[in-house]
Image (tube, rainbow, N blue to C red):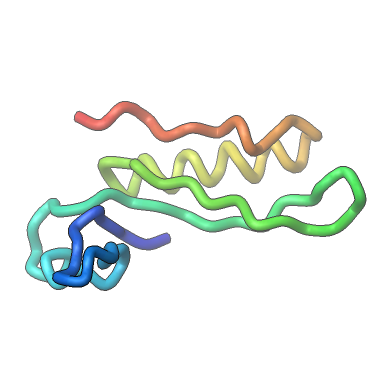
Length: 84
């Protein structure tokens, strides 16, 4: 679980999770999570979802993704909740 944002450096690249504003105690950025899910060929593939307004919302979506994996549903369809 981590926060990231779309702020850009002077060279045009994104700061992502390294943005200095993420550590100043503000609500800057959005929450994200990575998880490995199995693919059709049996190999694991990374699934990253971001855009959650709170850590709690990201944790809930991660739980839904893991439950989807356990029940055989397509975890790639887990989407972020609307930002408030």
